[in-house]
Image (cartoon, rainbow, N blue to C red; front, top):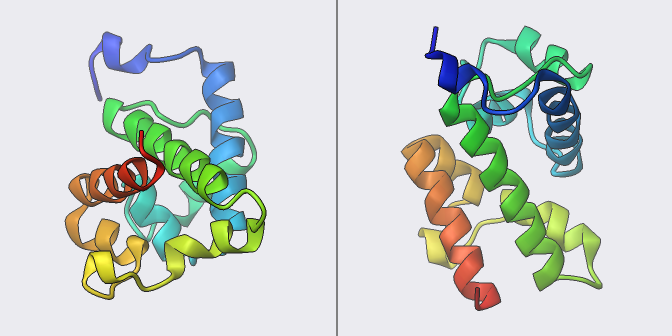
Amino acid sequence: MGTVAEQQVMPSADRGALAIMVMTLLDHWQLSTEDQAALLGIATSNRAALSNYRSGKPIGTSRDQYERVGHLLGIHKNLRLLFPQNRDLAYRWMSTRNRAFDHRTPVEVVKEWGFAGLLMVRAYLDRARGA
């Protein structure tokens, strides 16, 4: 269990709304349960956590998970800004092979590199957007 400071990242009700928001995003990206768990930094066998988050159980009780959610939402924002007229492409992008990632998908990068992979994908999109 984390410190009190880690547990109080954000009020529980807000973290419940955040859980629903990020799970909706992962559904839009049409990712497997295993991929969803990997992006959130939880065990791929922990389907119960994904189900709980879908129903609004607070997410982000650890700093790592809270930051992961923030980066996932930042990735989504970048994709919507980069492809404003093509929502399908914005939702498909995480599962599409990319030369910038040695012909791997952004999801594969995150699965291989963990949190660092998530930062790599986010930074790539930040640069593409000129942020």
